[in-house]
Amino acid sequence: MLRVSVHCSPIPSATQVTQVKLGSGYGSWTINYNRARKSAWGISVKSVKDETNGGRSSFSGSSRKIEVPFEQRPEEHPSALDSFKDMIAVAKGKKLVLFLDYDGTLSPIVKDPDKAFMSDAMRAAVREVANLFPTAIVSGRSIDKVNGFVKLDNVVYAGSHGMDIWTPSGSLKYADVGQHTKSIDEQGNKVVKFQPAQEFLPKVKEIIRVLEQKINTFEGATVEDNRFCVSVHYRNVKEKEVGTLKEMVHSTMKAYPNFSINGGKMVMEIKPSINWNKGRALEYLLDTFGFTRSGDVLPLYIGDDTTDEDAFEVIRGLRQGFPIIVSSVPRDTKASYSLRNPDEVMDFMVRLARWKKAKSTA
Ligand SMILES: O=P(O)(O)OC[C@H]1O[C@H](O[C@H]2O[C@H](CO)[C@@H](O)[C@H](O)[C@H]2O)[C@H](O)[C@@H](O)[C@@H]1O
Image (cartoon, rainbow, N blue to C red; front, side, top):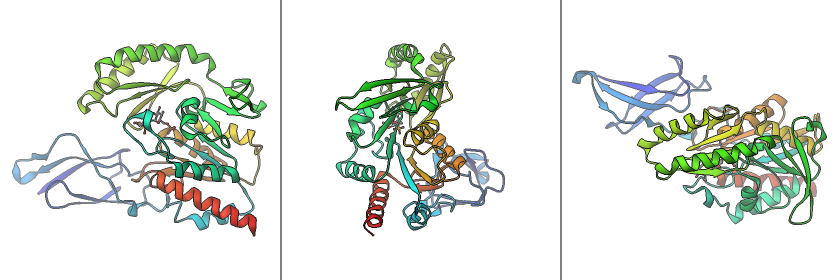
């Protein structure tokens, strides 16, 4: 008899995994979920024990992630492409505002963060929607970097996970939260910069210096300066060294109690511990776009990573709008819709633009 131990994140209730089937050999697994539960995602097989064989483990080593085909996507996160008609029916007569994350949303995830370029076709799609709807790019990167990738001047940018927002007008409503600085950009346009983590800048620079020295012993590890935040990348670090690298970062950061560490896609995101995130950035931007307390605004946020969840949560709280997760596998998320990858994001934007133009012509 084979007994399979499954590791789940988060830990499921006994009824959550309803059936486990083994395929031929130990490499093929089918796990059926209890779809009534929303959070049974991210299941991985930890071990297989053959009880006829003295209980010896037949599969060992690191746990194997089970990728559940998206066809099994629970209905509460339907495809935004398949649901397009329903979504535009809701959007009729309302004002759509677009928020787009960068890495993993507009550009595919690649090994080298400096080479996460977006395609020309994607840029054309973003330019097009931004001509039709107020559009913001909300990224964990520094504004300079994300601007360098996107290269569009008809969008507004929020970098450093929303801790650096550049808009034409700023929002006086948030004056007590952070500093507004007026300046002129390279094209000669007026820019108001909102930077609620200004005071942390010297410490951020210090953290970068310290971590850059310490990661030298970890081949493949890099530290990315995201201006008000720091990313420690371990995508290219040997698997067996990742744990030690993470411990090193956690122990280094004990000297900086005013900062927090969050996990992302093979990255540790270090951020000032202030009550500000991509969700609050979304609220700020809605305000600068002129939609505070507007009952007919529909924020549409597309993002792929953990820090985007704050924005999904805000949209859910507003009870109006579309939070969309980009993922090829089911995930535990606060999003209501899903798209599998940046190609689907592009298709979605193209359809959105086509719909808006057809509607305007009509
Ligand atoms: O908010 P985002 O725009 O999605 O930024 C989040 C982080 O994205 C980048 O890292 C991720 O993408 C890299 C390029 O594809 C990939 O190599 C890395 O493993 C991913 O974690 C960026 O480099 C980080 O600084 C951002 O915080």
